[in-house]
Image: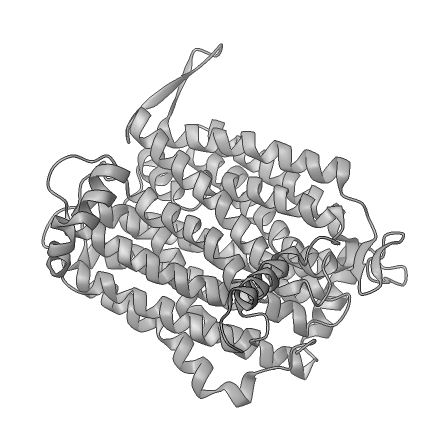
Length: 486
C-alpha cells in the first residue's frame, strides 16, 4: 500500500489505538499501578542504593562485610518470595497486599530509628525482606487477574514502566538528599531534638511513601474481581480451595504440587538462564555507587545518570515496546532484549578515555554541565555510565516486562502468584552472586585506596551477563514453553 496522507494517518490512528486497550480494565488494575509506584519509591529509599551507605556510615561496615550482608539479605528476599507465592494463591490478593504493606512499614520504621546494629538488622532489615517478598508475586499476579489476554502485553509493559517511575522518583530524591544534607550530614527531627544521618532520612521518607499505598489497597481494592473476555466479573473472594486446611498448610500443598508439573520444570530451567543478565541490575545498585565515588568524585551525582536515567527511559520505552511487539512471543523478546542488555556492560569494560571526544563535545556538556549541574572538565566516565545505561534500558524494555508476561501466560488458572514467585528462584543465585561478588570485585579491582582496574571488573560482569542470551538461543527448543494466546 503506498504511503499517502490518508494511509499514514490511518496507520498512526491504528498504532495509537493499541494504547487504549486497557480502557475496559477494572479499577483494581489502576489501584495496583498507583500502589506500585509508591512502593517502588519507598523501596528505592530503604533498600537498593541506600543500603551500602546505611551499612557503612551508620554501622561502620567495610566493603566485604557490607557486600556479604547485602548478599545474604537479597538472597533472603528471593527465598521468601519463592515461598510466599503459594501463600498468595491460598489467601488471596488483597489480604497478601495488606500483610506485606504492614510488615514493610514496621520494618522501615525500625531501620530509621534503631541505634544498635543488631536491632536494625534483625528487627528492621530482616523483616523488610519478608515484606518485600510478599509484595512481589502478588503485584505481578494481579496484572493477569485484572487484564484479559488481549490486554496482557500492554498491561505488563505499563506495570513495568510505572515501576520505573517509582524508581526514578526515588533516585532523584536520593541524589537530592545526598546533595542537600551531604554524604555524612544529618537532619534535626522537628520536635524531637534528635539528629539522624542522611541515610536514615532517606529511610524516613520511605516510611512516608509506604502509608498511602497501604491506604489505597485497604479502602479501594475489592476481593473477587477478575477481567474476562466477557467483561469484568466481581464474585466472592476465590482463593484456592483448601478443604479445611489453614492458609499455611494450603500454601505448602500448592507449593509441593508445582514441582510435579513438567511444564514448570522447563520454565525453571529458562529462568535459571535469566540469572546472568538480571545480575547487571544488582551490580548497578551495589557496585556503581562506590565505583562512581572512587573513580569520579565522592559527591558525583551518579544516581541521576544511572538509576534515574534507566527508570525514565523504561517509562517511555516499555509501553512502546509492549505495543510494537504484541505479536512477538515473550520468549523471543526476552532473547533479543537480553543480548542488548548484556552488550551494554562493555561500555564500562573499555577504557573511559575512549569516550573523551564525546565528553569534550556537546554530549558531555549536556549531561554534566546542563543536566547534572557539575562544573569543570567532564570526566569521560560520565559518558561511559550514560551509554551503558541507555543500552541496558533499551534491552530491558524489550525483555524484562515480557518475563512477567511469559510467566503469566503459561501459569495455570489460580496459580499465577506461584508462578510469579518462582520467577524469583533463579534470582536467589543472582542476588547472592552480586552481593558477595560486589564486595570482592570492589576490593580487588576498585578499592578505596590503592591501584584500581575497574575495566577488568566490568569485563567479568559483562561475561557473566552473556550467559542469558547465549543460553536462550542455544537451548530454545528444549526449554521454551507454549504461551497461552500465542
